[in-house]
Image 1: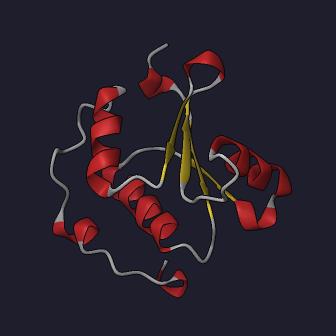
Image 2: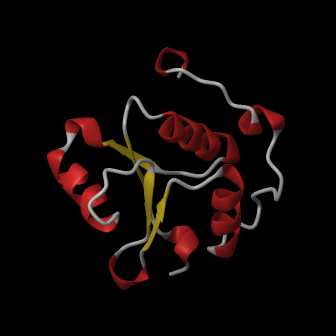
Length: 110
């Protein structure tokens, strides 16, 4: 199974701008993902803290399962595009639409 067929989980926080930006980027790029808000899930909070060396860093993305998993923490838009292309999302553009690069969002706007 290629990584492209593996699930993508976005661990985020409601008050985190980078979570909002990454969520919007995945949606705009048409990448399927599951979102877990760590504010509401103590197990998810523990996972995020452990994989980030004791820090509650969001967004944290988990791609795949088991030995094939990749964990990405606080990626910039270009970093996320590069990683998605590496794991098989070849349709993802190398450059992002201006609407993502200049994303200004608030929780009530999503």
